Image 1 (cartoon, rainbow, N blue to C red):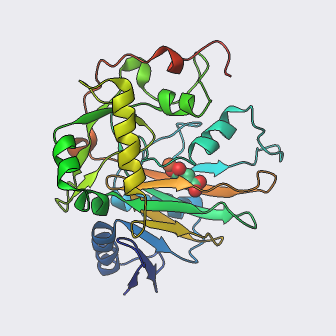
Image 2 (cartoon, protein in one colour):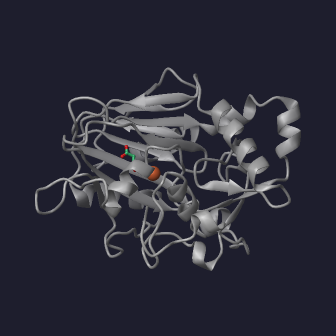
Length: 300
Ligand SMILES: O=C(O)CCC(=O)C(=O)O
Ligand SMILES: [Fe+2]
């Protein structure tokens, strides 16, 4: 049976004495229970093949198909191009990688947000390039009563066009991955976990506008919440070794990639488990994208 060792944080555990590619029913039950309890799990020294990582993901639910190749269930998150060169700063994929360095939760800007993300390390730089996670359950628990009262019942629009534009990476017309042209998803700031019933803050870089509140006031509130949330003991920063797997529950954990020297190669593999429609599918609202976030003929 797996050995489950809690991290020195409000969440997360390291799981050893198990191969995720080869679990019996009892081991799988222990892993799934640990996922719900700890919300993030680290599995050192797994070296999964692409098929094994996908199969592990499929134990948790349907796999979300992602750009750049929506026929693939696993995507490389890497600065290495197929021709062996590295992405340079004007390229679209480079901007996606830099965007990942802001705290976020996956696919919150799509109508169906993600349930879990499973990342494995294939090649890591000599320093930097960690992945940091933060526990939004503990963040919610520790909010002062005034803030809690203030955000009760509020929702925010989530948009990737907006979060990338704010980083100076404005989409070009026809470019991009997201949903905003059909209306941004509107998601409550306080989320109740569909399995555990625990409440958490549902924020991050894609959240940007709160109906009924001036845009700058909403942004200031979201910034303050994020600043409060991503602090110890709610943060864990994973220093990757090739072969590690780390997974997190996107319904209650924020994550971000940490910077590294872009002249070094970093190759990760990502498998994303789709949210269950009962809990992660929301109506897309009628939000209008502000002019400074609109796609344009050229990016700046
Ligand atoms: O590259 C990383 O460390 C994290 C990338 C990311 O945002 C993700 O896997 O969803
Ligand atoms: Fe991500």
